[in-house]
Image 1 (tube, rainbow, N blue to C red):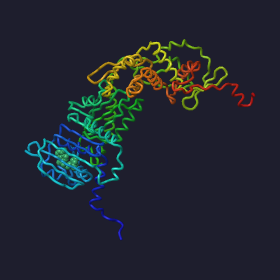
Image 2: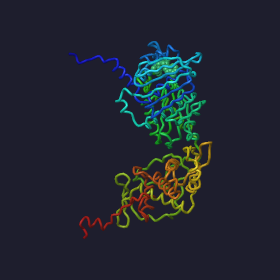
Image 3: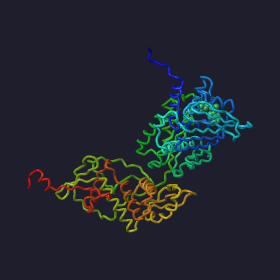
Image 4: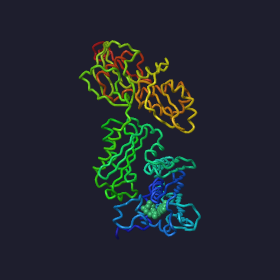
Length: 558
Ligand SMILES: Nc1ncnc2c1ncn2[C@@H]1O[C@H](COP(=O)(O)OP(=O)(O)O)[C@@H](O)[C@H]1O
Ligand SMILES: [Mg+2]
């Protein structure tokens, strides 16, 4: 008896449906791509329960004839290619003729469609891939595909889905990505009867980026590169601000996940010691330099010349950074305290370029240069400094100590009302609906801390100044966190404490930051003489072991 069996058509269909239709997102993606291929200028997506129970994609594209409608559910039924050669010159998103076939196999599906010149439209209904009916149906121009009860006949796949809100987020992110790639199409997303995205048509990618991310209005860097016949465009947010963890790569308007793109990001941003910001790179290359037929869900592509792709992306990053809107005086080096000549026994950190106006430039005025009466022995592990003073060994936690000093300094200025806000490049943000009133109420208490903002556009504000002694990045991050923290916003006393503690914690040197000799000296001069050896979180930042104690431990003394 043979072990090998030829699988039934039903099993084969389930396997191939699994390749294309992994989750509700896959359905949305395939249907939106079909709408794009049909020349739509308006695409409306409606979902319920993260797409698990219902998905509708309506477009104003070409529509289908009755004959095409009857054919479109068959496997490998496509109007987009016909010969082998066509595979190397694909200008449409789809070409495999598998999507509608696969989706219909695992759901209840209906397609209502009308071509612009036809008098009437048609409606097809199907269940589990079987066509139930095709009837004449009055409808508007274009196509509407409705998919319900996804995976009703594949319970295993259903089990692998995440929560409704997770699936909804995946779909929202995809629509944002599609909208960025196709700025000339208007996109709408409605989830569980709420409008999540309303994106009118835009005239350019720049406009679309700003429409989707108003917080980038004043901080968008752009570049364009042309190498032979490879064209590239990049859109990046200013460095050092992690506004969005958003990285998108499209090639010939196809959204692809490609390791060359991620490698270019890693190489460029880590060598610049910058965090990777909002990044959108769009390339247009000749169709025959690209093989799109390597992944069933078309997430991956193969390039003929990987090096060239890498070079274009790198040049885009370099050019965008070079085009940075640099304001005089806004870049200064990071110093902990006033720096005198560095001592050779410590590693000297290269000054880091970051966005801030003034930071540790002046000597702290509330401490009149205390006399240095300690000796630095060195460092221990990560972030502990060893010091000898008055016949004691002190072990200091560098992060906690710096945090405490910063906290007290900021708190003292706040309490004495001597905060001198630092003017910064305006940072535009859009408060969530319903929090505008609260924000207006908090305008005064936040200004006392140094956070000053003004209305910028109908639904957004510009943060124009930050508390002193901190970097731009720390200031913006703390501000955004405060905006999220509804509980602390209600109590303005709590607000000041939370804000200052958060600023100090973010700004303080990290445990793993190597310090220069002078930074250590300056930090210790203050810390060793400090009378409150606790960080704002209540952790001790200094431990003292006296000579007496040591002698006792070694049995030299009783
Ligand atoms: N929204 C739509 N508007 C017009 N025609 C469509 C639409 N969706 C699908 N079609 C037709 O159905 C065919 C099959 O679609 P699909 O299964 O996604 O395969 P593919 O996109 O790879 O051709 C398409 O080639 C197209 O002719
Ligand atoms: Mg398709």
